[in-house]
Structure formats: C-alpha cells, structure tokens
Length: 152
Image (tube, rainbow, N blue to C red; front, side, top):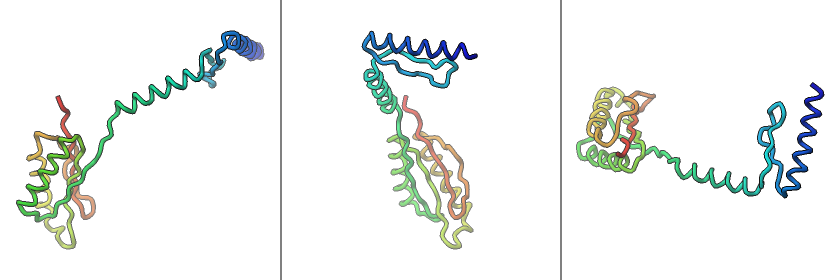
C-alpha cells in the first residue's frame, strides 16, 4: 500500500512538471478517488466554460409560479365567472393554479357546496389545465391544484 501512495505522489509531481512545461494548470477533478484524478488544462477557461454551462441550464429551466384564487362557499355567479376568467388567464400563462374555498365561522357546514364549486371550476377549466389534486379540506380551507396543459 505504501508503494501506491509514493507512486501517486511521484505521478502528481510529474504531472505538475508537465503542466508547467505546457504553461497550463493541474486541476484536481476527483480528490476522493484512490489515486486522485487530475487534469492538465487552462483553469480560467475551465471556470468560464463552467459558468457558461450553468447559465445555459438556468435559462432552459422554467420557474413555476403558483397563482391563488379564493372563493367563499356561497360565491354568486358573477363573481365565479370573473374568477374563472382570471384562472383561465393564469393557466394560459403557464402558472399553476391553487383554487380554494375559505370557510369563515360557521360556514363550514357548507362543505359540500365548496366541493361542488371547486369541481365545477375544474370542469370549466378542463381545456386549459388538468387537476393535479382533487379538493381536500385542510382546516378552514378546501384546496385544489390545477396544472396548466403542455403547449403542443
């Protein structure tokens, strides 16, 4: 085992000499490997390429925003239509939609009306998005998520 360590040190010093002769840098790629893996390269150019690659990956990834729409258990028709139009706009933009019915005080007795309202919204927005999770009651809120459909 001692021979391998000495050989590794010898290879490292030889690699350092080679790097100096080429006027490049010796960069440690994998320090945890049994003999550490090194590469002779221009370190500044390597950093530049790394930043460029990271920037490209960041540009390709998309941020998912979540928009919320709040209803009451007895939301009337006009308010429902207005909020439905906004929900439609959010889904067209590519945002996720979090629709919820908020039950104030004793209005919790209208749980079924809240569920019917959310299911109706899901049905009306069927062509713009798909339901990610069905209506679930969490405390005084009944929540449903709708994700936008992928553009073809």
